[in-house]
Length: 165
Image (tube, rainbow, N blue to C red; front, side, top):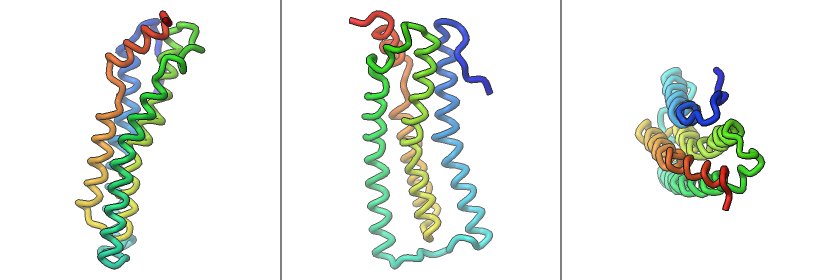
């Protein structure tokens, strides 16, 4: 798969690259984890019932849920930091270099946004329910929607990089 940006101002290619990476990290990976967890449980490799007592399991659920929701805020903040014009000044006003940095930065942001699905897998592996696992996947999907850089953000960033104040 070639993710390089070809023409000087190929916004469609940049947005497609970002979308591909987002779908892979924030949609495909969580649902693959869900499929693996479900398969392992059906094969008897994961317990059907919680391995912890009910109060400890609920406490773990609440702690992981709070951390997962907090990671949306952290991912949003990280996106704000990684998409500051000062981080793009080394591009020498080249759109291809700008696009490459954008495409690489979203990997970090998307990975942080997808991590709640890993918490769901851990909870599921400890005997949690499929509904609890799906809850964490939904948090990851919300994070993807919240932290995905939109066209306006990218265009404004490019303008600031191209013509710094």
